[in-house]
Image 1: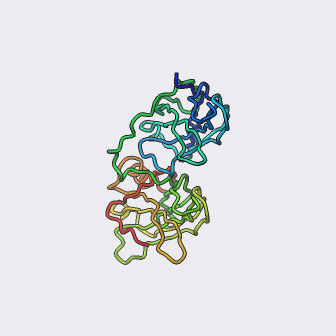
Image 2: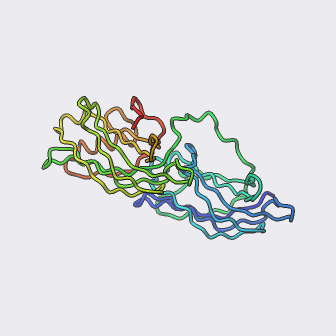
Image 3: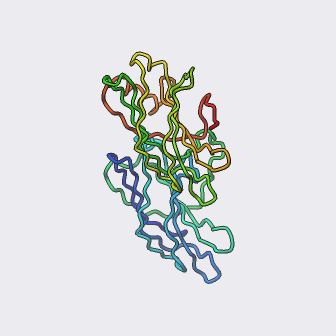
Length: 287
């Protein structure tokens, strides 16, 4: 018996949010000299786990039967994530003087959930499963970004809205970043397509709500790609690249669908979430 964990999962499809409510654990393994533990629960999404997408509950002291009743929420979850992602829910013991110790874990594939229905679990915890080290590093997630695209007949141009980011990778020693977003429409022969948002200080969940216009004929858009990169602003040294996404005719999955939907539906704003990755095809990663 390695203990049990009670929790529930809810995918709020309209708001692209996954809510994981950690209720309580029972019969955990003693980890400290006093025969008790200081447990907390850590949550991250596989594949693509990174510091950016780890969430955790508060720590409860000196107990093997903790009750948290705490909800951890991922924003920017897409229908694509619901097919291929699995939350890894780990119970750990907080240790002031050494590394925090892993107690036990459980995993639930998101494809088992129905949208907008809360599913409750009471699961026996298991020993840790090996984490797949062969995972492609280029798929490592660096956060999410909400981008809107609209081809405006009136303005004869592409309107690109940088709405917000969530769960960005922390680039500074304080555990935060000072993020801003750059967009380019490529190929960009005369290097005039760069747009930049304002910098948001000390946050991993910035809201920008800025819109840029690229004057371009609708027929020419099919030959273009939109490169969106997120950076951490640093004073006195070069800015750190956090992650990026490329939308366009050569993209795949949600990124290709977004571009097509924009081309097909003139004057309609299309606004899905995208996963930022640490590599961009053919991009010049300098600022």
